[in-house]
Length: 72
Image (cartoon, rainbow, N blue to C red; front, side, top):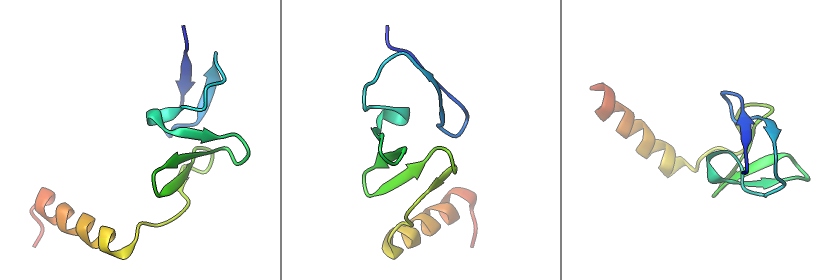
């Protein structure tokens, strides 16, 4: 069976296969060590996304946060 072990931030600790699919079903780029999340790359060793979301998406997320937390 294929098995992977990750830390809390998605960094691979052990793996029994060489599949390009990794943490959260995202594709792994062996040259950079990054995971591809659609429009952004994630660095499991730095624990960050490497590109910010475009401004309209950030505004949408802020509006959703206000709704979720009841902020005014």
